Image 1 (cartoon, helix red, strand yellow):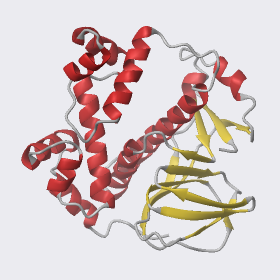
Image 2 (image 1 turned 120 degrees about the horizontal axis):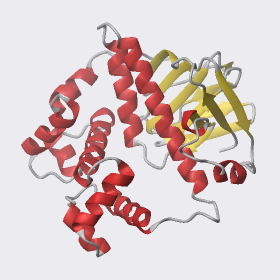
Image 3 (image 1 turned 180 degrees about the vertical axis):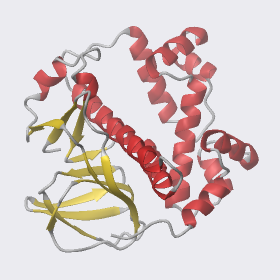
Image 4 (image 1 turned 180 degrees about the horizontal axis):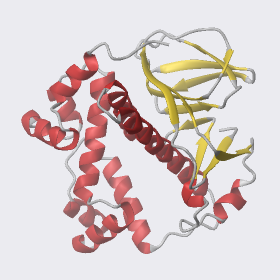
Length: 304
């Protein structure tokens, strides 16, 4: 990460205007060209080489890159045929933009002043030039939601796509801030924050198995009712809904980027019963895994 774009959206700022979101599989390439808008590239699978005036960068699954208007780049393929890239052109109208350059020496000061109740900070986004996402299944989820809205022709579909884009940018910004603030020497976690942090680490390391609230409480050696209360307070959701959302996000990424069967995908996220997995998937997505797979197997994705 050489540069972070700090964007402040005022109360009268426009929604992001999205030109298009593409899902590119397989071969990529082209000559170096300048960006005419903000551009996002998110690799959900495989690898890709980005050539910029500063040199070459090999990006791999979980990497996200942003190019500002005027930045020049070219994309080149390596030998990895499993490549899957979400590519988005968009603009942010009437915003204040600050560049924080290489070294990020300003971050010690910037992060120390962050106050969630401050109206400036509450309308700010922090987008990196290149970042390895801490958790990228949810970003796949947002990208597919944007594409579904983009191909929907009901009234308001453009608003839906732009709203989903804003949520995607916020999710990336949250991960960037988490990464940067984690390195502050004076960071202090309350006991409840520490319990939630350890809960998330335990859950995220065991998404291929079944984990319950009582498993978590036993692991942390704390009361289950207390854990349920502080987990919901800090995350805004129950332990069960958090685990379900994470598992379904991974399942959707597997449907998009692998040739696994529904039964194999179910097993990969801890479900021995594929029928029960399908019911849980429908509960979250409003369609069965097979319907989701069929929808995305249509010729909905354009090439660059």
